[in-house]
Length: 204
Ligand SMILES: [Fe+2]
Image 1 (cartoon, protein in one colour):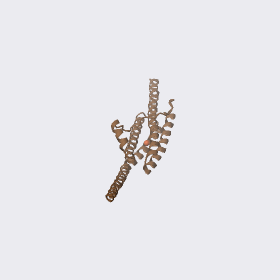
Image 2: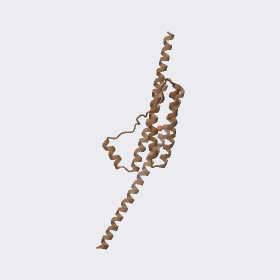
Image 3: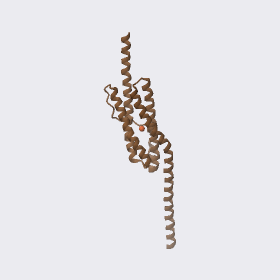
Image 4: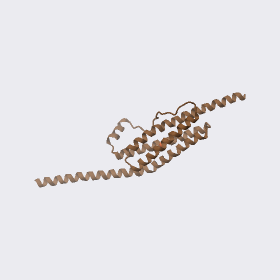
């Protein structure tokens, strides 16, 4: 009887480990994709303080990858940390709208658009880690692995909170700057028209 129960324990322990390792690799695959996205945003963003925050979070994300890799290796099971990239949860508009957005929007509008995607990604990562932590607790996984996910979760929440707080302010600033630029351009056109009219009047 006792032998049977021992078998059950070790079997469930192995199964638990396998699930945990798959989950950690899944999180790692999203962080692998997040690195690409953050690097792209770092090179394209037109807002200095956003660039600075993205650079910081890029460094954090590299540490998150290392934390996950370390736990995957520590749990053993022979599965190497994954190097493939998962699909980030960025909403995909219908093709027609996507083309309209991409062809008609200014760099400032694009920045506002992408800053929303930044926020969606960080919130999704936080949700993923919360679910992962809960799953590991239910599976009675080791404390170190749970701690690693908690550390990652904290960083996602902090960056997500910053974006949620600052995106509206930054969007407002970008849009009023754009309105000013447009006004100035409009004026110049009007001035040119007046000038031309003045010239024609003189000629007549
Ligand atoms: Fe993140």
